[in-house]
Length: 258
Length: 255
Image 1 (tube, rainbow over the protein chains, first blue to last red):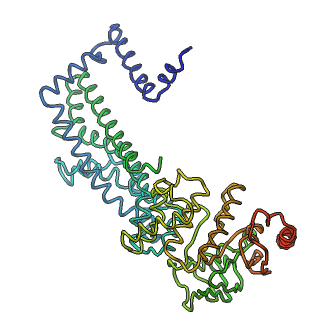
Image 2 (cartoon, rainbow over the protein chains, first blue to last red):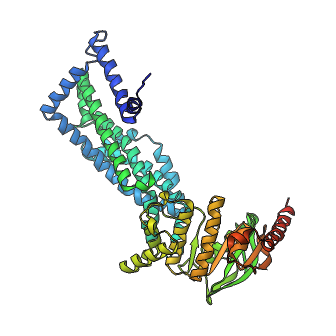
Image 3 (cartoon, rainbow over the protein chains, first blue to last red):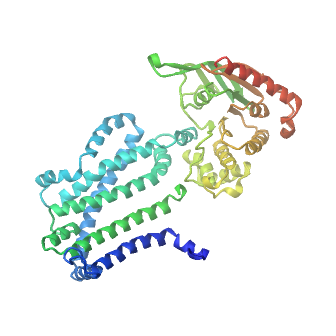
């Protein structure tokens, strides 16, 4: 079909194909809405969504909402990630701690985090704390158990080599275990960051004064589907940027693992 | 240097699951000696090495190094594993420096010794490469340099060339022999390869499996001035065949 090898190589580049996939959806979206087959109230065109987006941006709502949501996600996730690291390492290296905590965490992990929202609102009211707590609950147990697994897969030879070179105690942890699990830990964070984003939106749908999720639920009340689309697209974009950030960090910090 | 392994037995598990893997192992190793333990899988030869390294404790018997009982791992017994021998996130030079920096030696000394031992194993040019950029043989040479850099009294080699292609294996055997001649190191080699043991070691212990025990010991007196030639020489092949026959009969009695 495509004759020129250079062109074919260009078309088969993962980035080009990825952008092509996204463009395809836009084209279908544009054609469906511009043909007039669908009521604009249900499915606004790309132009209308863009307009709603720039309106929100100019009023300053968009940035304020995004910052509110990002703050919640980061606060909850930093606490979760920061606690999961030492506890996960402790569980991965010490059998007693592992036997003590793994069943407990395995159990809580399967309780859907959004089911905690009513309880959190009763305990902590409607301010920031319940939302941060929700993100913590929804990611901490996954983070911990995945880090524990990473530690368990450290080849015993690497630890034993350090022992036979005169290493003992803490240096084994900081100089053998930590560097070995670093790529998996970053990947764990990257994956669970996605659930943190899901949860912040859920929390905001239930109760919040601002935030991207709150904006979506307000838009629903006034049948502003264009604003709902703005919210969805912005949430997706921020998530994608964070994901790419983690990938970039991993490539830079753990180039040996690629 | 005097390593004394006296009546060492080792079993794993408890109660009815208790399994004897080593029974009454005794031998001595002195400075400059190159010794090999040969046996099929299940002969417990790796366990002997782990006991000497201090990674396991004997169930009975004692291991003494220069009169002191071995109770835990230490840098006086350097070890080279078959797999995962290098830290994949460190360059060749950083791997060699790893033990030295664990011991808290000065920066200048670490740099100097690292360069020296990389040179000893012929990899001065590869100092800044990561393990994945090195061939299997080069990786094992770096691992040997790292073990030597902390000046162990004895070098423990656990099937160090077991994962390498035959040709690289042969050149690594020649490399190790030259290294032993030039540095006068003391080495204990674990291998399932009789040829490898006979080429390198002055004393070869043959181990039988289930439970692991030393059944035969050979003192090898061969002209090692040219290993390539030695491999195909008549006395070498005869000795190899004799020992191979012994190993076969040990395995055969189990079938």
